[in-house]
Figure 1 (cartoon, helix red, strand yellow):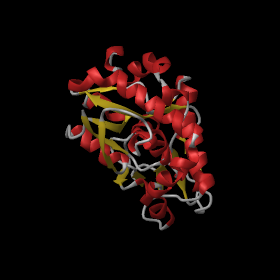
Figure 2 (figure 1 turned 180 degrees about the horizontal axis):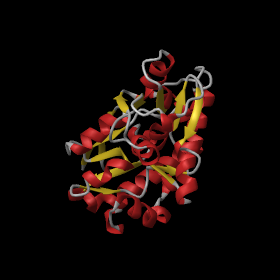
Figure 3 (figure 1 turned 90 degrees about the vertical axis):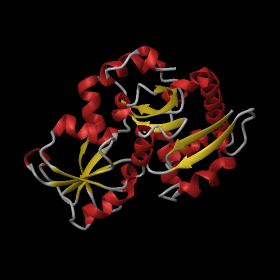
Figure 4 (figure 1 turned 180 degrees about the vertical axis):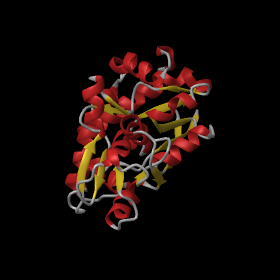
Length: 262
């Protein structure tokens, strides 16, 4: 079977999928990769273009008629949420109408922002790697940063206003739902096998990191080895191998059913 598969260029995705996509894992299947920003992938899923695709948890309810959620490969955990950053300490809650840069209207990051601060702002969509420059240049009051931004915002001269993940954990006492891997419902007969292959790919990366390191760096926005490794260590965890323990809580958050997870 040939699958077209969409993942982001971020180190956690290339770490998880790298061994599989680079041919280090033996399988009778073939995988045709498409790699781009998470909001591009969200829209690909909304258009039902890909067989397997990484998406933000926040938009999953819109595609559950056509996709199921794989139990392996996603981004879910503690201490890994999006940050709100600015050039100086700012009272975001009282800055209604201000321009806020977001990494896309379908992202979990945007859903978290609206959940805690509401919608009375002028939201400016841009690629995640364009958000901090926009904040520094004063084109927006603040930005919601994801991925590598969590590790380098101080170096960019910015301050953290809020950790949206901390707000989530304090309120719900549950892991932060960031990104999930979807598979077409018409292909769920392959779900167990794809989950197994992803677990093998993660295991290969854990035990043979140097063999996929260049693949990861080739696609990363931030090339510093320490930043890349910190990114992987934060976003790849036991839930990436099997997010089954979190399913009940996710169903409450997403309004879906346990059988939507395969």
